[in-house]
Structures are given as C-alpha cells and as structure tokens.
Image 1 (cartoon, rainbow, N blue to C red):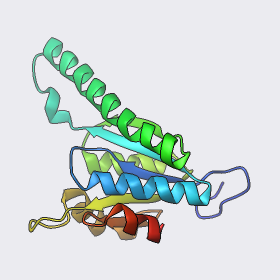
Image 2 (image 1 turned 120 degrees about the vertical axis):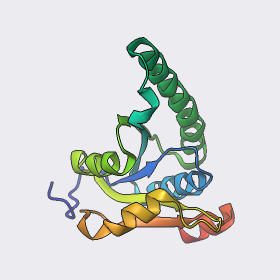
Image 3 (image 1 turned 90 degrees about the horizontal axis):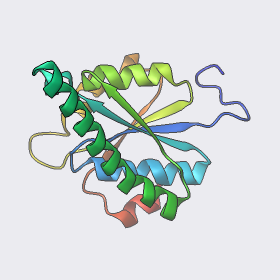
Image 4 (image 1 turned 45 degrees about the vertical axis):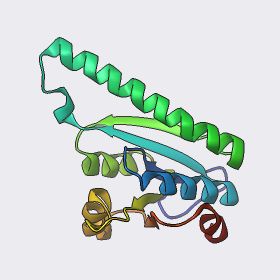
Length: 161
C-alpha cells in the first residue's frame, strides 16, 4: 500500500496517544467514534520515557515492568469502552523513548495509520506538549493530525464524528 491510497482490504487506523493527561480522554473518544463510523481501527500508543529507568539495572527493570502493567490496566479501561460502545477492537503499542520521536517512528512503522489524533489541553498553559511539538513538525508528517479540544462534550463529539 502506498500511503495516502487506501486499497480494499487495508484498514485505516487512527493513532491516539495514551498518557496521563486529561485531554487524552477526548482524543480516545474521537478516535473510536471515527473508526466505528468509517470502518477503521484504533492503535493506542503509550510511550515510556527513558528517564523513568535511570536507576540501578535491577530497579530499572522492576520499574519498567510496573510501567507496562499500569499502561495495560489503563488501556483496558479504554479498550472495554471501545469494544462495548463503539464495536472497535483497539490495539496497544508500547514504545520506550522520547514521546514525539516514538510517535513519529510508530507512524513510519505502521503504514495502516492514516490519522494521528491528539487531545488539546484546556488550561491556560496551552494545548499541551505533544500538540505543541507535533504541530511544529506537522508539515513533515506523512499523515494529518486531528486535534480534539479537551472541553468538547460527549454529545458534541458524537455530532462531529
């Protein structure tokens, strides 16, 4: 498949980032609703930053495993909602590294990803670090970015998806 030309049998996936931000929730909802309405899929990416493991080797391995367990538990909450309410079976991808670099790497590694979905923060600090950093490099990305405002209600999200 050539990126941008979707052939029969290929599924367009919405890539959404799972993190501890509040704006993550609306991005998840939007991705699942769009996937359900367009026959697409959802890939949920969680990135473990490298600075979490700058400890002794044994401690670092324990912390890495604990981070993966937290990610899986968090993912299952969203996955259950996506399956039950939207009929979408999401896939989980866990990468380690700098978040922006790993998001871009995942987009390049998975040719079925057609849209990156990010949630924008609602506080006065701005839209959030991922939106800010990825917006600056959006001209070089091979796919579009959809930025979902964090203040949108479930009803508004349903209306626009």
